[in-house]
Amino acid sequence: MKNIKFQHKPSQKLYHNYIKRIKKQIAILPKEDQLDLLMEFNSHIFEGLQKKKETSETEKLIDVLDKLGNPEDILKSTVAEKKLVQATKTFNPVHIFRALVLNIANGVSYLFFSILYIFLLAFGFLIFQKIINPTKVGLYFEKGKFAVLGKTSEPTATEMLGNWFIPVMIICAVTLYFIITLLLKLKQKVKK
Amino acid sequence: MNNEFIHKWKSQVKKGTLAFIILNVLKGNEFYGYELIEEVKKFTAIEIAEGTLYPLMNRLKKEGLATSKWVEQESGIPRKYYVLTIVGEETLSRMKEYWNDLEVSINKISN
Image (cartoon, rainbow over all chains, first blue to last red; front, side, top):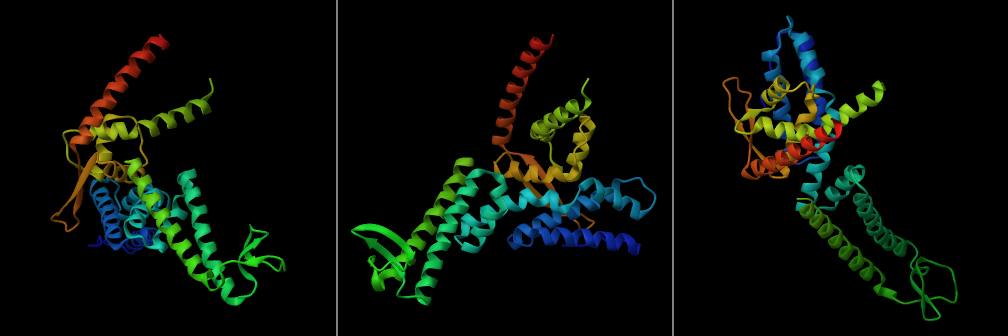
């Protein structure tokens, strides 16, 4: 991106600070989206400066940036939406997790997705627990009925999975993961 | 008269009609962001917070109502021009129908 050149130091500094705030706000988006957003705001500032009638360069810039608003406020919804698009395209868990966090404010359904995601993390946590505490963690049945999935010291409960515990937990996590991602994709399509 | 109530109501109306206004201004035209804001200001008394235009344009693009393209400039700082799609034009004409119906009803009630 081509930066706007200023004659005076204060305006240069003001401009750079503003651009820096935009960059910080959009840093979690794909490079392509970042450049597009940055260029659009840069263009807005440039075009604004050409049209303002104030006498000094700094006054013009202050007026343009003031009317434009805080980068944090303006970009919030765009970043949340674009992150969600990226998340459902890539199947990357990090993107999905971040997109969900950003979108919780946008509706109850994302809260539901986040809860599903916590379940997903729980399977991971169980595997970790099993490694630390192999004799007390598992899928326990008591008198033929499901009792505990996790840690128990109940002597009458019998563990059902044995060495299969970790593989089964991995399969559960992967399955849930695909279900979440597919549901998210479906939701995006319905919205359109 | 309750000024605070009017103020809140006005801001709700503005928020609710901004997309409709933008689509109308964009119809038959090609504008870049800053120009689009100036056009909106020319036609309406709505003082739009300039920054809110961009998330809105992003949404209109995502919904398939508008597209954009970057056009290089002599200054070296390109402009992003927005234009309505066919879907956008059709959507707008439906919105106009609804708006006209609403106007008729409101005039009947408030007279």
